[in-house]
Image (cartoon, rainbow, N blue to C red; front, side):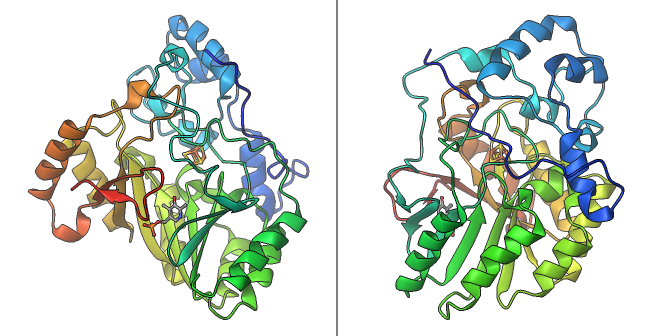
Amino acid sequence: MIPRTSPICQSDDKPLAQSSRPETHWQTAIANAIREPVALLKYLNLPESLLDGAIAANHSFALRAPLGYCQRIEKGNPDDPLLRQILPVNEELQTSEDFVFDPVADLAAMQVPGLLHKYSGRVLLITTPACGVHCRYCFRRHYPYQEKRSEQNWQEAIDYIRDNSEIHEVILSGGDPLSLTEARLKNLSDKLMDIPHVVTLRIHTRQPIVLPERINNEFLSWLDSLPWKVVMVLHCNHANEIDSSVAMALNKLQHHQVTLLNQSVLLAGVNDNAEALINLSHKLFKHHVLPYYLHMLDKVQGARHFYVDRNKAIHLLNEVRQNLPGYLVPKLVQENAGEKSKTAIT
Ligand SMILES: *Cc1c(COP(=O)(O)O)cnc(C)c1O
Ligand code: SF4
């Protein structure tokens, strides 16, 4: 296999210092995240037989899991649906021709550094490479994040948006945009604020799910300061990911007038059964979130063991549809390089 280095650098998430100031809680939580396979196995009472694979796969894409997330994992259960999303395993080292480095051709769609304009009316900004958690199936696991994106590069992205009046929605993505401090978020939103054709700000984030302490007062104040309609697309794959701390964060977001949607990835051994998908939709709705997309796995190298094939996916969605009101059924979609929107499967 081709040697890889972890795409995730850590520029934005270094804690200032161990501090009890509330605004740095989340940074401390990132700093204290489990990063050593041996520590994760020990914390969860998992068999040592998993260690060699975990260490091998960890070299190409490093383990990172906040303690709060690990607490939601059943101890002693190697098949736990949350564990599967974070534990590096041997299967990641298998290569196959149809699982590639850049499956959605993001690099080809990059107009200026950090800006993807694939679809009409909206652009996606890669704001930071950092994430609160490292998901083993991530399609950006090989992304060349090490390219430094300076403030000056943001300026290029801002200029691009200003010059294209058909862009009405700016999507903050990453990595995870909520890895940025409020100071940096404000810096970005200030730059966008004088562009009259931007009316919606969308934030794609997994942070409220994996690091709910991120939804603190400073963040909520930043939200309140924005002149746009704000949509947050969360990334939650399993009902067990929503515990009381996540519920509290979602509740706060709802009270600050954020439209809450969720996207999941259909993942073998995590949520590839109708019961898991139905439970997820119910739990999301209980906490003010509507399901938006259920993504077919992007065929990224190292993620083959998560793949659910198209026939099974369609069959699953039919079963889900028979058991839920229409508004709780996510759209099953696939991202195909070069197409003008995500492709609906069913
Ligand atoms: C998914 C995606 C979007 C958003 O698409 P919607 O269908 O509006 O959710 C925008 N830009 C890029 C590059 C994307 O991958
Ligand atoms: S949070 Fe999103 S971008 Fe980050 S590793 Fe997980 S799937 Fe990838």
